[in-house]
Image (cartoon, rainbow over all chains, first blue to last red; front, side, top):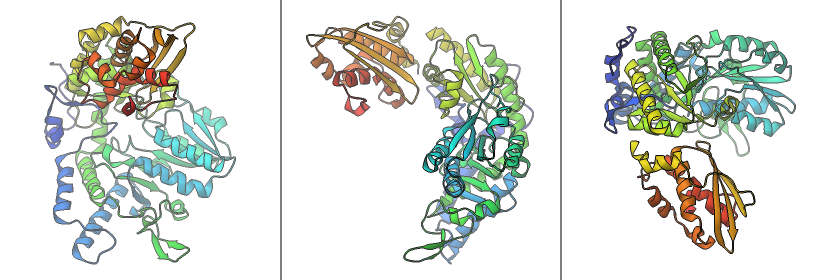
Length: 416
Length: 131
């Protein structure tokens, strides 16, 4: 399908796409149109090569051997920590803890910080648009210590109702945990303002950056938060690696999360003393190759420029909102303008189940997600059991939006 | 895949058999596929160990709704023992689309059978493997 909009002159997307081998395959006889980056992104050759190179040339355990291989692996692993720190504007690489993913990062805070700081009757403030990963760990903490959860609502445009903060933030609120960019609605929340309000009552602020860090410049100093969690596999990196950033003095005061090798200084029969941050929170052999390849992914994103990526996705999302808005029977849930919004959009089609939409689109080679996207509370507010989600990244092109629209017309023809 | 949306599937989806509820069912059971939120409820009227009437309600995708329509059509008039023995393979034969390589959609197709068996056996829930 030819359209006036071919691409946007922000970077050369067609050349960039060559870096992603997975995109150049046929699915059910059509070129793959991968529109499910919000679940997991694809990765460029540079990252795949990095993993291969690491295992072929320089694998050894980190922080242990004094031989060359181990030293090289340790250096590369720590260099990667530095890249993460630089990416998010951390004061020091020591504030960055490698985890499996954002989920584990949030669990780490909920368990280690939560157990030491949250008491019976205290309150934790979340929002109704949180991913399950930023709800369930807090529920588990609340149940353990007898704390309570409060939720900020969102309005019909998918924006947080900030007035809720007026009565929900109290001196009993110990933690405010908010998603930066919703993995469903696409909303980008006003984190600096919420962080300021949280600090006014003495609460800490955790930001779930799983959907923002990959797509825009994110600076923890500008956000004014205390913790930031993100996943590598959503930002062109490998699976099994993510990170937690925390303010140094807060991390220093936190007890460990998992116990084991690396995270100790001295082990006695009954007790042990624990290593300094960040190693205190990295028990056992970490995902070394994945951490190093995450560094390569960050190099790749920086090479294109996160500001440019953000700008590009902005244009693509505006185009998608416009085109999808013209398909009869389609309801887009979430902001209808691109202001403070990312390239993730969920929609429903009147009388048609999202699974059928996703299945028929799959037949056209278009990969979208159908379901509740790990946001059951959000879907309960919307009043629908499930939605279909299309999400974009730096490798998506307007033509894929056109194919999505054509696919939806086919869905209607088949099922209406 | 288009393969799923064959004419007879769409026909059952658009014009379902036995859709609705029974006023005085002997057994009423509901199951949800938590992966996608699909729900199927079966109302079953049993007399003399025979399924005299059966109705389904709920919401879901074309596959799960067509499957419920076909299953109720097939099972109505059979004995409870026969219905209990009705296998996953028999249902998939009825539906007649290749679901073996698509575990997600297989769950959609099996939801109605899961509901039927859990209802007839009077258990809370059943796993796909037990069908």
